[in-house]
Every structure is written in C-alpha cells, then in structure tokens.
Image (tube, protein in one colour):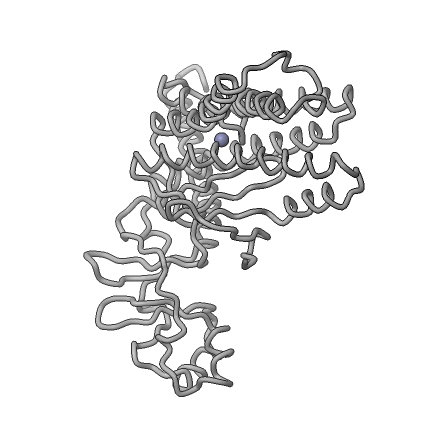
Length: 376
Ligand SMILES: [Zn+2]
C-alpha cells in the first residue's frame, strides 16, 4: 500500500486499472468499526463494504465501455461520497453518453439481480434503509445510486449525459445551460439540506456548485485548446537541458543543481528514453554517484505529437503522474511540454482573443460611422 500525491491508497487492480481508496473512506470505516455502535457496527461495516463493491462495479462499467471505444482508464478512486473513474482522454459526445450511462445501468442490473434471487417484501424507496435486512438494503441502495447519478448536473453521470446530448443535438450555449441547471440543482440540494438537516446534502450542494462553475470556465479553455497545437505550448529542445544516456549521477549533479528545470529528459540519438528529476539526482548523489542516470529515471512518460491539438495535452495531463510530457515530431524528440504552462497559455490566449475581438468591433463601428452620412 503506497500513498500517492492525491491522498489515496492503491488497494489492487482490475484488468490493469489501479483501484485506489481515498484516505477519508478508511477513516469512515474506522469510525463505523470503533464508533461504539456495538453489534450493529459489524453489520453496518459489512453493508458499507458491499455498497462500495457496488460503487466499484459502477465505475468498472464506465471503464469497460470506455475501453470498447479504445479509451484507457488511468485509475479508479473510491471516496466516501462515491467513486471516480479517471479516463485518459475526452471521449466524443456519443461515446460520452454511453460511457456515462453504463454506471447507473450497472446499478440497475445489480438491483434486478437482487430482486430476482431474493425477492422483496417491500419496495418503498423512501423508507430508512437501515431498518431492513441486507438484501433489501443493497437493493434500495443500488436504486438510489442509479437515480442519484442520473441527476442532470455535473459531476454526476446525468450532467455528462446532458452536456453530451446537447452537443449532439447541436444546441447553442451548451455551457450556459449545463452551468445553469447545475446551479439550480445545487440550490435544491442546499434547500433539501436545510429541511432535512442532512450534512451530506450540503456537501453535495457545494460539490455540484463548484463543478458547474468550473465547467463554465473550463469550456472556453477547451475551445481555445482545440485550435492551438502542442507545438505552440512546448519549450523547444534547444532550450531544454537534457542528459545523454550513459551519464553518471556524479557527472550530472553540478549541471542539475544550477538548472532551473525540475525534470530532465535522458536522451539517446534523437529520442528520449526517460525522465529524471533533480530531486532524484540529488538523492542518489550521496549513495550511488557512480551509477548511470538511466538506473533512476522513469521510463513511464507521456509522448505528445507536436502537431496534435493542445486539447490532447490537457487530456493527458489530467492522468499523468509527471508534470511534463515529451513532444515528438516524426518520431524525433523536439521539445518538452510543462502542463502548468498550458493553463497559463490558455488564459493569455483567451485575453488576446478578447482584446482582438474588441478591436474588430471598434473598427467595425468606426467603419459604419464613416459610411453613414447622417452620423455627421
Ligand atoms: Zn458514474
């Protein structure tokens, strides 16, 4: 078990997809086990574990459909309020609808399976689920998971289905509509929270609000990122310090310490074979100074094609462990892309476009005034 930078622990993997559990989920289990509810604590703990099994199946359903479209799932993380499947690239609208629907459908299938095998005495989904036996509890939970996830607001699956469907239908102002509905839903959650006193509803209200506003600001960035290329954001290799394959730690240390770069490509001929961080070089200098850098470099880095849309870089950045990607053209190393620069570049580009649009509008007004004789 190893903690990664997001506060999650890897607990295993299913068909190559790492399954992570967020630290807060372990705290929730600890609270249930040691929280002192006596006999029911064990049953509650088993129930919570089974619910998370269902959430995991929900996420795996997303991953499975994504895989059918050739889209890799980088990891699945389970939080106390649900799961998250991080897929490596943005799917097309039609694919997104199917990928998003797969999760809730999986929960409905589980519910159907429980119904068929156990039968149910009572089907009122508004009763307190903790007053029932395990089968009924799980049945109701899966119905709730399906319904809850189909609420048409981000970050729920329903929000993705709504956004992708509007795009397919060619509706204008998709972002305004999805953000508007998202804020409406977050207000409903908050009102529900006030009336019921459920802390979870306030939490969801906040999560939905933040996601909706974020979507509003990210959408414009995505449009700009589609028209720019990876080449526009990269640092060309002439301005990147790199080390030749075969360089020892001792030979690299002084150059790495006087460089601004936190990461260095390790090259052979015209290609990059790995990436090594300045921290790694410093750490190894004390103990392994005569070893080759290639012993300590990471070979698992992202390659981007220089002429690919910058949007691809954003998509790969979300799933990348390193803060940089190596840029290639015709198979040859041409530069390095730092992900944090991409965000800054998009803000600058957005400002530049707004300014030039205002100038065009001003010129258009001036032209009109010139042509209109009554303007004098
Ligand atoms: Zn889902």
